[in-house]
Structure formats: C-alpha cells, structure tokens
Image 1 (cartoon, helix red, strand yellow):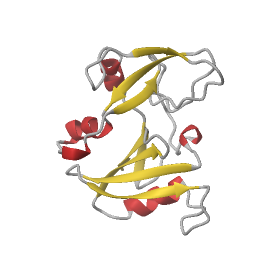
Image 2: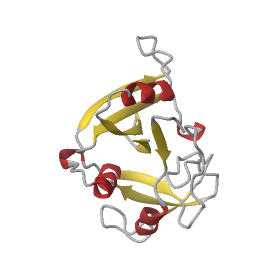
Image 3: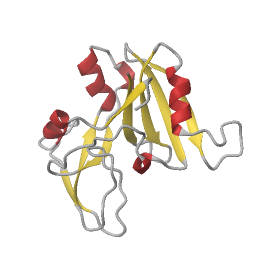
Length: 169
C-alpha cells in the first residue's frame, strides 16, 4: 500500500449482495470460463482459470463508493459488467498494486470527495508520447498529489471496464 492511497477489491458485503442481485437489478449471469481464462476478477483481484465458474454482474463502483462516503456521483454513476467468483473466494489481501490488473493501456479516473470527476491519466505502454513509460503507481501518485482527489478508479481502455478502486489513505 502506498502512504497516499489504498487499493481495494469489491468488499465482501457488496459481493454478497451482487451474488443475489447486481447493481442493475439482475440476477448474476453464470459463466464458465472457456479457452485460456484470464478474465480480471474484482473480488480477489486475480485472473480466471480455464474451466472456472464465474459470475458476470453489473457493478456501479462510484455509486457504491458514494453511498459509503455520502458523496453524490450524479452523472458519473456508471454501471458496467465485472467478473466475480460465484462464492466466497477469500478476497484480496495484497497491498501493492496487483500485477493481474496491469495492462498496456489503462485509464486512471480521479474523483473528489463530493463525487465529481476531477481528472485522469492515460497509462499507455504502447505510446512513444509524453506519457510513455508512465506506470500505474506513478500515475496514481501524481493524481493523489492533488489534495482534492479522494478516489481513483483504474479502468481498461479498450472496453472501459472498471478494474480496481483506490482511495486516499
């Protein structure tokens, strides 16, 4: 864990709710991972294995964070698909940014304590531009230098999928 922020998987209480009804009001969709596996799991911040049973659920990360902190996500209240284990997997116990959530292209979205988007950073390992070589850790550290940043969400660029939440320590 950084002294600026903590890394958070979806918490056990929320996972219990999502395994019954997701944030879109639907029952979880059972999925059996075929092929190579490798889907990012937001419950334990791991990756799926070939043949593993998963649940695909709609998740509203900013809404959940806002409910916990009394913020108002307003128009930033997005709901999107995430994979979780269909039963308790023990969660995530790491403290460094999980290698399983890395990729060549990630977006960091910073939010204020009130729930408004404040800014972001593109982490693009394929770019030769100004941000070439920018790591997720360095991008997070730069965003958290702003005292107005309360949370940063890490997302995949290609599909916009929520991967992991960080919160000011």
